[in-house]
Length: 222
Image 1: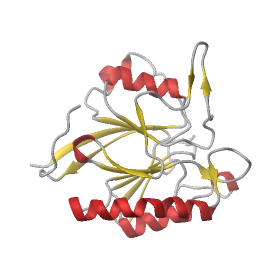
Image 2: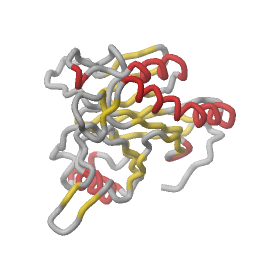
Image 3: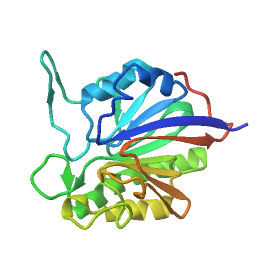
Image 4: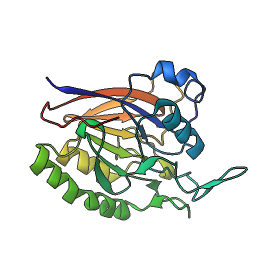
């Protein structure tokens, strides 16, 4: 019997239903959290503490180098796992990789040229190849802030998609490519697009997804 993993993915905007005690009842069945960027670290830490499950994150182009509070400062959300340019194993052996930031349009700290994004993607390839050899698949979740080229992106330079992401989706076919960055203001806005077998999902606000993993995967402890 396949293992089921339920994922709460978030990005770009804080929501009262998440930043409140409602989160426990509404998302009690979720196994892990994925942040696609541009959310305050205190918001992500609240999610970790209330749900008591792992968080994997990438930073968005608006992320501060340091987030200051009245009595503290943060370089990352405490308890979270930064997956920028990494491949990691998540809950129940899920295979996850991530790349932070957006296309460069000013001197912000988490912005990259198209060429630099290609280099970021190439850093993921060895880990994905090892995944294929060990587990029979390259990746379950690709997590980025920016969308892939010509999918869910826009014409203005800050919101143009990343060419290397589209190539990775086409070649390695992760089950999901989760991203943020492009805000959705209309009910009929496109959130989900298929590229081959890969489901590309804009997680603006939040989305809940579920995947099935091979039964041979060793169940990890929550």
